[in-house]
Image (cartoon, rainbow, N blue to C red; front, side, top):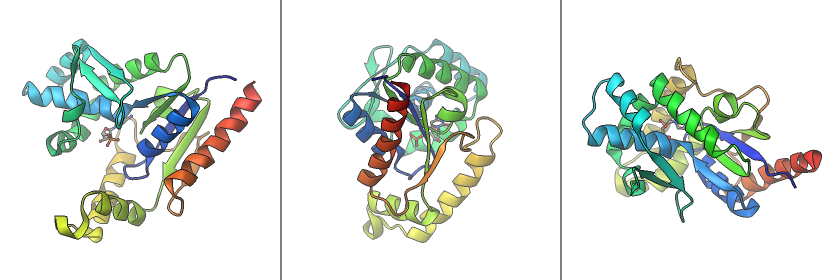
Length: 224
Ligand code: DC
């Protein structure tokens, strides 16, 4: 059966990475977490204290980034050094939007992502996979959920009331970020014209993965 390339795009909190990992495991495919790649560039620019875009671009171009499948997360290495554990800190999370909006940083990452998925048998999650990275992906999913559902998920994930959070404040933040992401000049977050739009507000992760698997089976059958 043909090994497909599967693109999953959508906003934060839609469950893209969890679903992509389930799909990769069940199908024996490789999961590529493109957000982690932008996070690794961000981590390195913070570590080196790089402030201006030109310096970040020069660093990104020279960066020896490699990835490998991991247990919970895709593993990322810079010059052979594993940096996976440093990619989800508040510092990196706060700076990654700015770094990932630099066009030449995106060009470097897109080239690497294309190379890594050239053989198929890959599940990529991100914001621009179906539109920019893999315009010819075999299966394109735009995975989303209502701002309220995503806020409740994040609230639970981050420790809820004990962590001093409210669903309302997180929902407000999500609406603001959605607006910024979908209106930014470079690679805005928009569904590809040929993507399947899947709102999983009322689906579990299992049900979401099953719905996408059904689409993949149909596609693989057509291509066989
Ligand atoms: O999915 P994540 O939170 O790990 O993504 C980190 C950041 O990188 C987020 O600000 C969106 C951005 N990103 C992007 O611009 N394009 C991608 N393909 C993946 C992530």
